[in-house]
Length: 315
Image (cartoon, rainbow, N blue to C red; front, top):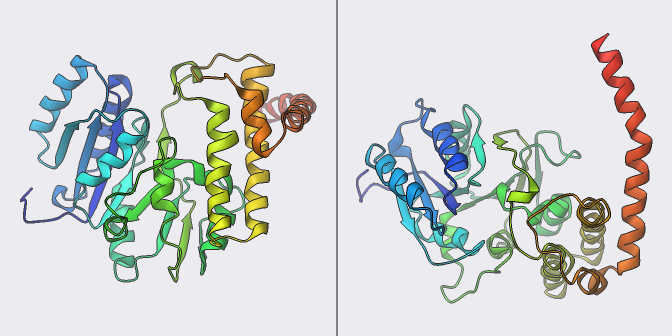
């Protein structure tokens, strides 16, 4: 790709070098041959120490001229924001290193860019996880956008944004260490159009929670994420009703985590220390405990119905 020819799309993939994950993701990109490679670039930002991966990705880049590989010393989630700084495309799309692109997804992104490059609305690709949204939803204000994103605004996988908007963020800005994507997601508060696209575009490679992140889980969702929402409220960027609505949604989410990894003791790689203190900041430890037990009861009551459904489906 010519240095003078900027692509339409930059696909940014931060990774710690797990070969079994990222190469299937890259394969899902480069098998979509209907899209000319000059229309997009792929940026792989590596903060791991896997020498085998480094050798393989360097060789892989030699046969794909639109792939950029770079190592970084930024640990954890901050490698994500570092990958964006290399992007040259008009539109930047984050892709998790364990999330494959379904056939036609690159063309879908290219079509979106061409259709919206003049108005440049904010967009979040929620990939079918928001049950309340069927297809594509549009909003005329930031508050409605945040309220309808609900707890999924904590999820970086849906991130897509215009390079022009990213470049407006002051260079000296510090990205949140646990949620760097929110610095970008919540920066554009005066757009005339906001979009949540709930179309199924990605296929996550399922791995055990025992092999996921090592960050402090309940600090992340019990303190840091609600604090980000609180900052939006204090800045009058969202209404009190929106803050309380997303905070309530997060309570259900965090109670499910508490049920799985504390009460039921399912294996995970997360740091679970200090959970009582973290959960007491915005919610109250006993409230989370009660909510977790209610979720457990609902799961137990639903179990016979799932068995019956399987029986009748087979019949």
